[in-house]
Amino acid sequence: MPLDKIDLSILREVQQNARISMTELARRVGLSKTPVTQRVQAMEKSGVIAAYRAVLSPRKLGLSHVTYMEVRLLDTTEAALRRFNDAVRQIAEVEECYMIAGNFDYLLKVRSRDITHFRTIMGDQISALPGVASTSSFVAMEAVIENAEIEV
Amino acid sequence: MPLDKIDLSILREVQQNARISMTELARRVGLSKTPVTQRVQAMEKSGVIAAYRAVLSPRKLGLSHVTYMEVRLLDTTEAALRRFNDAVRQIAEVEECYMIAGNFDYLLKVRSRDITHFRTIMGDQISALPGVASTSSFVAMEAVIENAEIEV
DNA sequence: CCTGAAAAATTATTCGC
DNA sequence: GCGAATAATTTTTCAGG
Image (cartoon, rainbow over all chains, first blue to last red; front, side, top):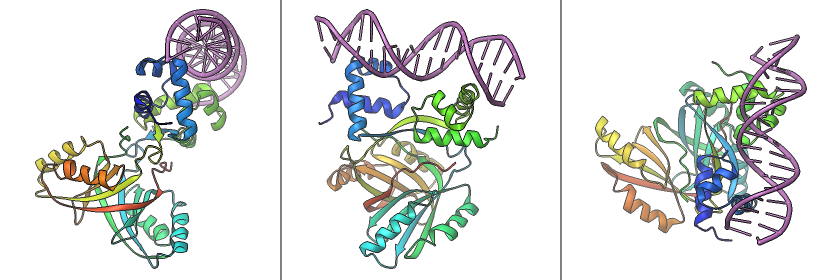
């Protein structure tokens, strides 16, 4: 079940507006409602469309402070990695976390109200993660691109 | 117009499901439809709710390769920064971009099909950005947390 | 500022082609 | 995949507390 041009066109539309009606979506992609509804349902079922979400404004919520953290672990055995992964997923302020090939082990994106708040998160939560050897923090001064759509 | 507990509750619901009806949303937050609809509209207007988006699965789309890039500029005059910002926003594969305080100037998150594809993006697009002095790349081996909701 | 119900509009579904 | 008819929901409106 490869995606054709119309599927990609549907994905672009729902990425821009998740609340679009099937009627309007059909009009935009140039097909009638029946097949468009079927295509959307198929992509929901297959998981290509993972969710529909409201995107909130960090700035309006007073959560515009972003810090990236490099986190190195004491050891990188499978068990240690799994323990860290499970624990970091519990921290609400960690917006993204990737295991990195190279000098450090993990890269975390932390969202906070301000740098004082970040300090608390770092001290109370990140440093308390299992197996952390050391961390380095990089403060963002400006969000140039925040959460772009996936290009399909 | 500060947000009260019910507003935050609404935000949590719509972050989880953007396609929820006002009827169902009202039931969940324990209020009738009228005020819930008004609150949602107010938060859309004020920009707290910035958009409604379908979240696609990078893996299902064959776009699971993530690379972080540190980019240093030749000079950091206001004009140079603005030129870089404007140009980087044109690159579809750059999912996030923050200006960083510290050793390097920018941190970019680049999404690609695979490392070969990344190499093309780096060579053709990132290196061609105005004023780039040097770059360092960090390949993600595993996505531990990808696009978490904002905690409200 | 909220409730609840009636009315109006829109949307999704079904089905023959 | 189309298009019309049907059925179901949803949004809107409004009187009242």
